[in-house]
Amino acid sequence: MRLVLTSLDGSLLDLESNSYGAARQALAALERRSIPLVLYSLRTRAQLEHVRRQLHLEHPFICEDGSAVYVPEHYFPAGILDERWQHRPPYYVYALGLPYARLRSILQQVRQDSRLDLIGFGDWTASELAAAAGIPLEEAERAQQREYSEIFSYSGDPETLREAFAQQEANLTQHLLRVRQLHFSSLPQWYLTGWVQPVTEPHFSPGEEAVRRLLDCYQRHLGPVQSLGIGCSPPDVAFLRWAERKVVLPSPIADSLWNEALPQWQLAQLPGPEGWNEVVLTWLEETDHGGE
Image (cartoon, rainbow, N blue to C red; front, side, top):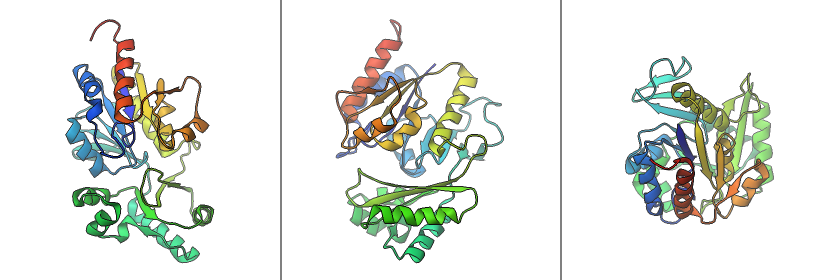
């Protein structure tokens, strides 16, 4: 079987317009062939559900930087998902991230102990967030429906911030924290996630574990997977590592991806949905073997 893994912002969606219009031809080609399109994003479940409705997708997706995998009910036959998948209608969920309430508590502790000016999404009303970020109110409401991550603003020294969270992590038991700057944001925003350190694969990030688990489900259901991964920013490493074909789209921060590059990574010629469209169509032509 064939499968496409992709990020959204700067890849399938244009950074300025948030439109996927230039990728319509490739999206239609995937739909005709019944090839799963799996979205991987730092966005929330509510935000990804909104995008999936627009794209008419009914496939699994991975949200909040790999913190949880959502598989629609009845997508896989019985026996493919084990007891670690929680049934939360209309999905089965494999959750890896620390709950939002725990992250909010950690953020508050860092703010208190280090006296840093940190303002998280949970500190805003939806109207305030919409005005500050320059987004529609409905999108602000979806962005605030966080389950495993927090976005916060901070304009001070980045190293001071990282040291503050490192100190907080040292006080936790078998928990890891990750704080990264959001380079695509117009505001000085940071992204906080956390997870329980796995016993079997301690070097895996939640994103890598999430992708690995989902690909394993496809393989056990339908056999070997030919996968195409398309990304444009550092978080996309989590799924690019596991894709058979790894393509990076040009972006203002794409160069930093190459610090993690593995053999046979490719750089697309065009950025955004235009490049995405070209990459997918080329891959389909190469793997169709003369027909659909």
